[in-house]
Length: 75
Image (cartoon, rainbow, N blue to C red; front, side, top):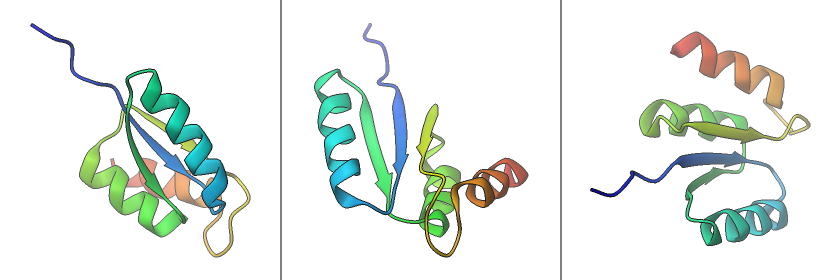
């Protein structure tokens, strides 16, 4: 029986950062999902239930702190 992949949600408004992190984490066997903003991150976190969220703090519109609070409040 194989272990299920650990799902990680990457959230950053810089596509290059998501691409870099995603490439390296996928190479290590993690299942990666990503969002470019806080609102999409909240939706994905609720839908996908990742085991880990790597969240940028400084993003436009909804910053990382607000995104984290929103995710915590909905779970």
